[in-house]
Image 1 (cartoon, rainbow, N blue to C red):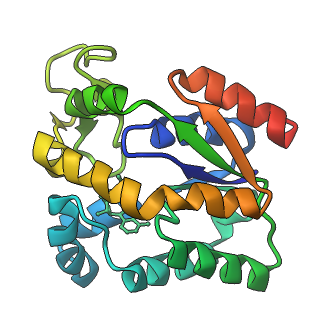
Image 2: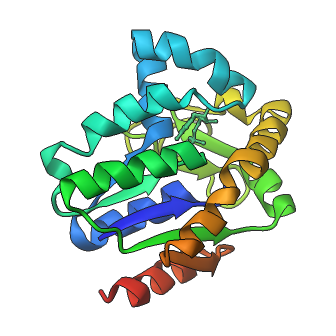
Length: 215
Ligand code: AMP
């Protein structure tokens, strides 16, 4: 399947993407994960992106479009892809449209994961992430704690709170989302691709997507 996952930070895009990859071999492409990997590795891209990310702002479109232009050409995208965190601005959406037209690829849907702001705030401040960039398993101190405190169940690496998941950065990220990314819902509605789902349960989101794409 070929999907865009839209939704505020903490709406569950990453969790849903991971559940969907297991269904048909589509690959999850998370621009946030790619950027965090670059920051950790200390690459030029990481150095340019870190300040924006830590403050809860978006990284400039040019950097993201360079990443995605290359990423979508890789072989593992052939069976399908789940775009998690991209596009996030109207110029990114326009650029993606151009890239896909060039590649002769059509999207199945742009899925909007709709979650109330209070639920999102609670989820993000209690979220913890495995620090191993090859794992990045997501935990929640309330609803999905690690078996041993601070240690990833899957790979044994330390589980951390992300730099951009402080209360201040989260509030900025939600404002950024409302100003720059929320307009994409109208954009994809006009394109006839929008699937709006109430995202308080990831299982319900996956069921709605399966029905929409017919798997
Ligand atoms: P995420 O894990 O998707 O919430 O992304 C973490 C951070 O990476 C965001 O707050 C942005 O600073 C940056 N980022 C990720 N994807 C994009 C994008 N498509 N455009 C601009 N910035 C992005």
